[in-house]
Length: 459
Image 1 (cartoon, helix red, strand yellow):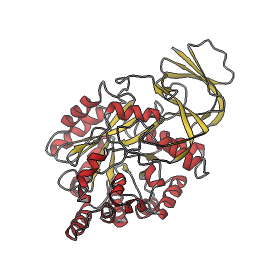
Image 2: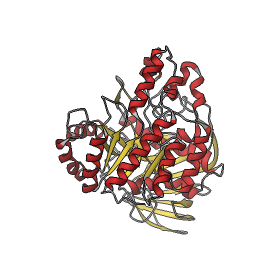
Image 3: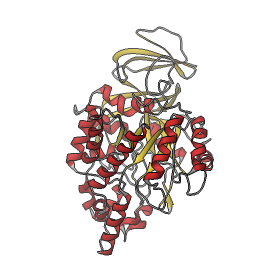
């Protein structure tokens, strides 16, 4: 099967030019100008931007959490991702307390295999680190899972203490992996949650007030110090605020490199949404939305190279699930739907407004994640021999986000009525047209597991 994309404006993290892309057997075969080749499928990309497929390294599909499950399955979640231009996601496996990493890997693989529409990989969340777990790190890296998630919050469920964190870092470093972290001070948050509940304060606003900026800033500083001490590559997921990013800035003064991810919601939304009575539950997530000044900091951090990745932390719930916390903010399932909108929102609010360049856009939506997580150059760029994961994007088309048109398995939109400039028109996954004319042309099971390489520790 040969496909030729003609006359598109090809954008990578480094390039910006008009050209043609020849695709054969799922990979990019050649790139040139005015290519006259007999092919099976011809795609005219005149006046379109041509991006590498998006990589979202932070999603939660069918995740058990707070007595329920996130509402997107591997089928619905990866399909929605494709509609929005994201061709590869990295989901989080959760080790159950006292169980092995292998058991968690087998459980999550069973959910994904034969069901995913788009490509996927896994992070392994370590919730119980001991000698047995230590012995499995090398085994998981051999499986292509080279990143290990830790939680500094959710005590009694997901959280590990600093002693376990240091032990994990030592072993992961030795085996060629990377440690990622949910960096918030769980003990302080638990105290504030109980304080607000005891005072009869039950609305979603108190979810936000129970996680002030200091809880994230302190934990981020502590994590950065531990990675500096152990020499283990570190990655902070969903960083939201100025205080936390300042911990990373401080690390650069001692020549330390820490990878940072923020999420689209922290760039665009703010804590005023929690003032809408229980409607604010739509945006209850951890960490919570922050202030306008934090948005300014995060946009600056992207351009300064301190923030390398924009993900989503896609963890959707239906409204009836959110209602589990109608009388107690601490029982509202944490998370919001965004997997489908990241690429278009970031283009509209970042590139179209002049906040970031086209090349920076590709860096933070695709290339940097591919490099950090051991998928580059197979994923994350448009180059000869790379997977032909490609987006055809209309930079001028305007449209409005709504629950009526999205493909995520949720009955509300966190961005309802948001007017967007820029539209994903077609998506190719490994050379096959997956999205065209707002229809999905690949079936569940087309998505493949991406086995990742050991971590280099730099990009």
